[in-house]
Length: 380
Image (cartoon, rainbow, N blue to C red; front, side, top):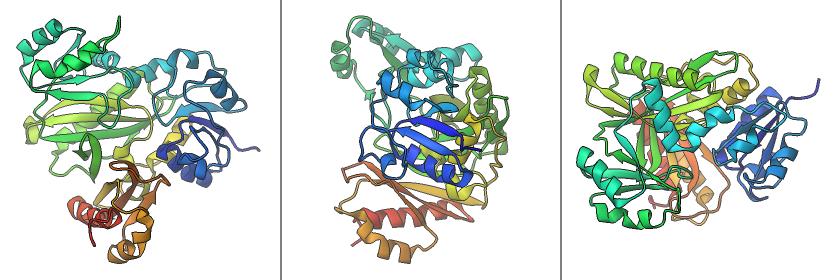
């Protein structure tokens, strides 16, 4: 029996970490990478070079494959419907991760809790919205944004003028109220085509300049009621939108205890930064689960293996080669697990992440943060 082939679009760290799970399962990954130097190209033998909007490259990528999936959403959606293999998540679902306006519309349609929002294309439309929700507010480009890119918080309408001036005919922006959240949460789950769904514990995410910096698993001080409510919301979104594969639902939590209110922030339909802790912290990692799900295999157990876990991203470094700091970092926190993505060092760039599992998520975060500080050159 030959190994099943999963075709993947995108050569970043997510596909790189899929390869580890594929090795264990004996699955063949074929990944479309942006260059021979891409993070995934360094570890996946079958890595043709091409861009995500190159239709010919994607047609060649799926030849002989059982399924096509993604490590990012920046792919030509309409073209995906013409391919001769299953696409998971399907284009009809993926569009809600590609277009934030479409996502807001469908959340309203299915009754999921949205912040107040509006589609705007002019100063007048933005002013009307601001008169209803007040300032500050958030502006987003409907497509193409990630890790804080394509997001602008404005205190005054004049701050939006440059974005409005750059709009071409037919283009619009998404305006949202600035939710006064107390915590940012993420629900991570997987769904297979046959309908089986499994969910990991709800986690808290902490952002740094719009990029996820720390993940605490499970989310500290979250009531059982809100934990269940968040999971049920994630599962309802996956089912209503017919998502297959891993789905991450980022949420704002406003208030404490049983009075907490949840609002959907964004969706991602692939492994997600908020789930990296599952590699060491869960019986089944998000990467293995994604491969199982897109092949419609029975899903794995998502139970945590400890009472707490934390992941801290390595965002840039003052060192030319952070790995030279391994001797000190690994000696000081031997329980830390370092994942390095093989990227060149740039300020703020996601170079890797560090996970620690233990009895308390906050203590795990402190230890992981210590390792990251050393790898960033902050601890001399």
